[in-house]
Image 1 (cartoon, one colour):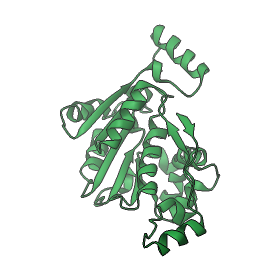
Image 2 (spheres, rainbow, N blue to C red):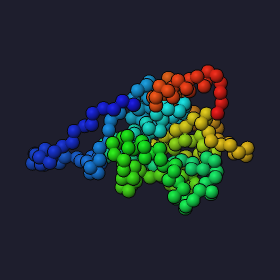
Image 3 (cartoon, helix red, strand yellow):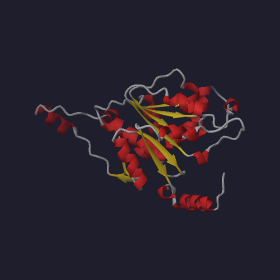
Image 4 (cartoon, rainbow, N blue to C red):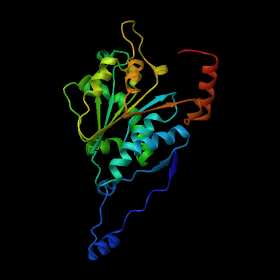
Amino acid sequence: MEEETTTRRLTRKEKRLLRQQGKEPKENYQEKLNFNLKHFNPLTENQKLAFDSFADDKNLMLHGIAGTGKSFMALYLSLKQILSDPDCIYKKVVIVRSVVPTRDMGFLPGSDREKTKVYEAPYYAICTELFGRGDAYEYLKKRNVIEFISTSFIRGITLNDCIVVVDEMQNATLHELDSVITRIGHNCKVVFCGDFRQSDFTREHERSGLTDFMRVVRSMRSFDLIEFEAKDIVRSALVKEYIILKDKMRIVT
């Protein structure tokens, strides 16, 4: 996505003049946090469709090839809506992800909460790019603007007043995806991101629930399903070339 120039903030003098005129300035969330989100434009037609659907307050299913910006868009659009609108009904972004795609989590050192840290790495990187500072993700987590929940801990929770981003959903079973969508409460919007070609399931008795889940979502009026293709790859020219050739050769990983 293409970066735009950040909107100028009001100076203290400008705010004081507005108050003297009886016009109380509405300070947005970014100013309260002293934290500025960069602005990005969509780079492809399908990215523009995602931007437009999100602006129309639709739930989204972003499905397709790696490198098309699905996770980046989901987090960017969610944070932009929450941080830029003082009257936003959504109070935080909840990132949900299956943290046990290989089901070997028990062999990792540390507590269950500590084990999930490795799966938060992509969101550290995305927030660093969005805000231009390396501590952005932790900063937003401490202020309850971002929350990370694994599917292992979502049962019994009701998610209200938030935007829910369900990432890497190809690594979740149908039971996990069912558990997530049935947690959605009042004043919520949900964005699912995934690609059936990137599933990490290796054991015979386990399989991704993405295909079956998508069959249901396709029939739901409250969802817009956007399919990303090779032409939508924006990560790099190298990635685009590799994926196009791999598909042409019908190589399955």
